[in-house]
Length: 344
Image (cartoon, rainbow, N blue to C red; front, side, top):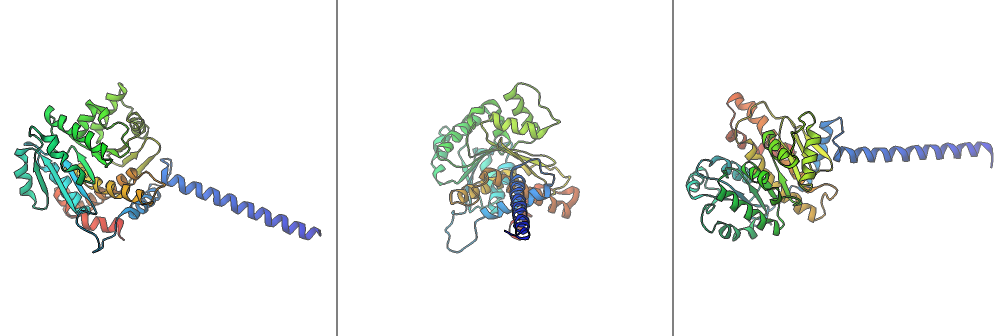
């Protein structure tokens, strides 16, 4: 073979190998952007996960029947706390669920009903046969949110625990927030290892749960490590640590939701998140079962969607109302925030 031909062949092979190496590296980087907390670009990570969330949002069509896009149950609401279950339930509807059920105490029912005729309110949480009454509805629910306005009475916590156990046998997503996290702190086994369970603690709730499981103070200097450790200790359950940036993990990798919010921290924002998350969790697991987005943990995709939406609502409401922003203002922004994030 002439020397010139050999040189050309050698050059061609070198270029081909170089391109192959480049493609492999690019694929590894894309994978890392999806699942690695080490990415330097939060914006890039946000964009990747926003794309995943968009892929699980069900299209609107006249061919569907009522209830198909989500029937969400809220376990919470007592005499002292009626706003939280309302915020969670109405947020679920605004995100796109077809029906929202609130299972509350008798004293709270009339108050919650007066907030909105859109909600289906069941005044059974403090009845002698509460678990049996709620269990009648569980086959109709696609996801359960436990904790908003639940309170810490032993009888209510006992009922919540039994409802969680029954819901696990139906393999539906269970989101635990607020006083539901108090229950988990006392009895971690109630949700330990449940693959469709999602915990949404704020910093104080997270600290209590971490120290209850690890029996030592938490290292606040490395929150990513701490949230990963707690997820692993809870059987790799999906964990959302709310804060300046929301940290989401299933014990393997940590993703950060850094969608811009605001400096306003009015009460009730966590209820918007938990109610929204109930819907996103149903959508994500349904999409995964249908073969959509199987490369990612559906619970983490759902968590990122709910965190992004809540932060965007907070930002938009703050632009309008500034210091006087309330959770009601945020709820009014759900429609436009959803469209901006997931339908643009």
